[in-house]
Image 1 (tube, one colour):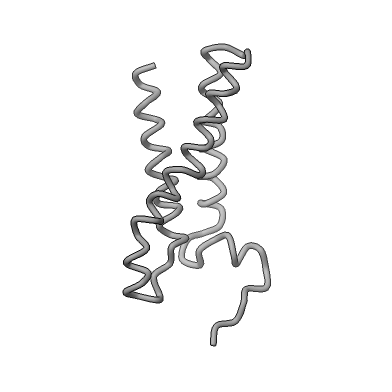
Image 2 (image 1 turned 60 degrees about the horizontal axis):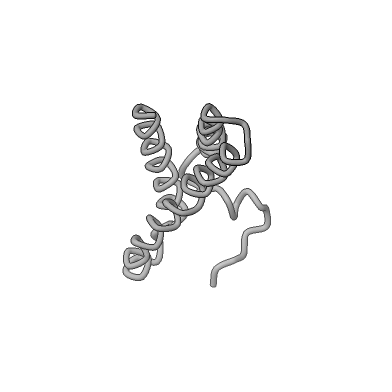
Length: 102
């Protein structure tokens, strides 16, 4: 029987990676998303920022974790949180590469 985590940090952060590294990744994604404001500070610029944030913090990490679900089915000790943060890191690198061509 598995016990439920008592702290919110146990739910959010995987136990194998330092919490500061995950926080730095999230802050880096948020700051990199603000790069869209160089196009303009009007509504279109902020819509681009929100789009980048959704892409980096939600869409690509969730897609990566969804693709990894068969691994969780086969091995119950497999942590999907690690795959989610891997997807966030890949989205961070993708956005960095995208900024080269802006």
